[in-house]
Length: 400
Image (tube, rainbow, N blue to C red; front, side, top):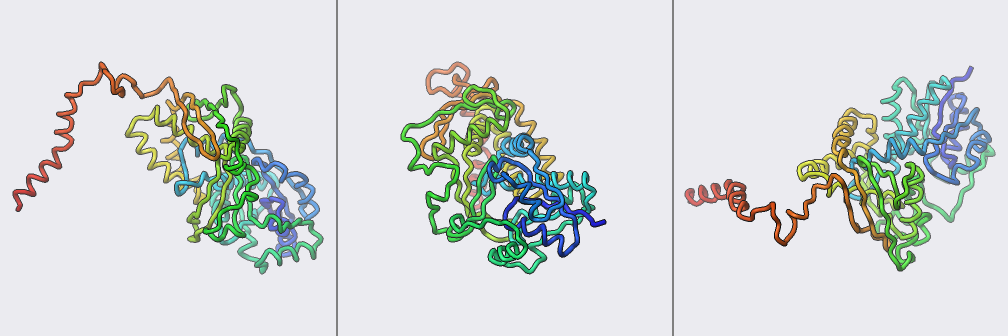
């Protein structure tokens, strides 16, 4: 009886030819697993396609809610942004896909898992570290690091020789990854950082110059750092993000163009469409400005950078990330309230925030007459705060 391998299957060229390759080179019974994280029409007919490509069985798992609630929201609460721009849309999708591979491997009694990530990218690390953390006894097969295929043309020829249907479009030469959080574009003319992305690149977001001439206002309600309502309507996680995506995209909001440092040491250029996510990050941050004290806010900024690096590097299931999650969760106890934002031709700007836990005191902050602040107290504070500088200057003068 043939051993079983579970393949992370997307329906694209690479994973389609991996099915016969695994059968021919290892004699495996291939179980294809596609995970629905909000790819939309990309998943239409994917199960049938996997079976036609030679898979013994194929699963399509709807994990959109888990993706938003258990992967996106924790990262949002952390305020994690990789290298100041990237909102980690592909990064935090991979550990969930890996988790699904492990679940099906256990269900099917498989001894191995496989993925279609290349040897140049980050995804190979994200898949494999997650699998090692969740079920280390599973064998991991990465065909791109093993086979002799070295180009897209060779992959197309391989598929054609085996009668595998792989539609290849020269009109969309980009490598793309899509889920409910973002759509990424890499390759082709984007490989030259000097090239401006063309308007026809964008499949989700309206180019800012073509967006409406009148701004759109949205309000977002948060409870303990989690978005729960849009424009006063309480919604589930998936529905809220889907609706916000449409509103932000229509106003040209959420285009991210970044030359990033991959974990493997290569700089790569990616253009990301992340409409709803961009708005949520702005809104969440505005609420934290209102509700977190200075020390906590500043330290959380340090944590956010490390958190983003861990997620980007594939260390979702690491002890340090678990520890950081505990810190982040404690900071979100008071991040409850409502934020209003103005969306206009690609920009997202704050237009008001309120919280029952607000630390802002108008009486203290006002330039008018305030009853709780004595200006004279500042003299003693400045004298003590500046004492080390004064002493150093005096000692320096004596040394001369």
